[in-house]
Length: 200
Image 1 (cartoon, rainbow, N blue to C red):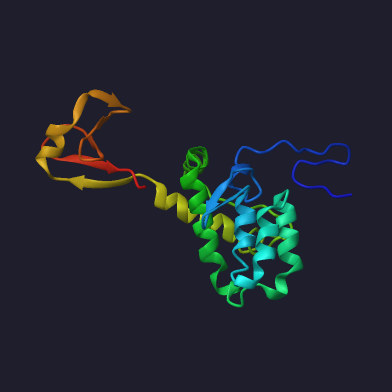
Image 2: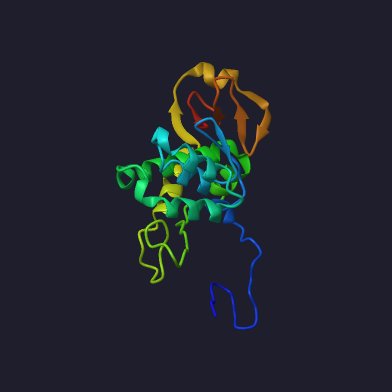
C-alpha cells in the first residue's frame, strides 16, 4: 500500500492542492518551438530528441494522451536522446517554466502569490527535480521556479525625472500607487518618486 502526504490506510486524497499549477503535470497548455503541448512535462520530454531522424518519437510525445505517457515514451527511447541532454536540461527546463508563466496569467499570479517562501517539488520519486524519498534531493524544479519568481517580480527603482511625477494621474490611485505614462508607477509626493516597472 502506497501512502503519500495526507493519505491514510483508509483514505486517499486526490484533489489538486493550491499550488499544483507549478507541477509540470498540471493541465496548462504550452506553445513551444511552434507546437502546442498539453503540459510542460510533454514539452520537456519532446526537447530531449532534436535529431531530424527522431520525428516519430517527437510526434508520439506531442500526441501522447497524458503527461505520464509522454514521460514513458521518453524513457523508452532514452538511449537515443540528445547526447548533451544532461548539460542542457536545466536551462531548457527553466525556459519551459518561464514560457508557462508568461503564457498563463493565472500561473504567474499564483507563482507571485508564494511570496518569499521556499518552493519545493515534493516528489518522493525524483531526487533531482524534486526532494526525493529522503527529502534531501536537489529540488531543481523548485529552485528554477524561485529564480523565475524573482525575475517576474515588479522592479523598484528611484526615479529622479520630474516629468514622471507630473505625468502621473493621481486621480486614479490603486493601492497608494498612481499610473504613470512612462510605463511604470510613481509613489508618494515630492520631487522624487519611486517608479515601479513591471517586468515582462
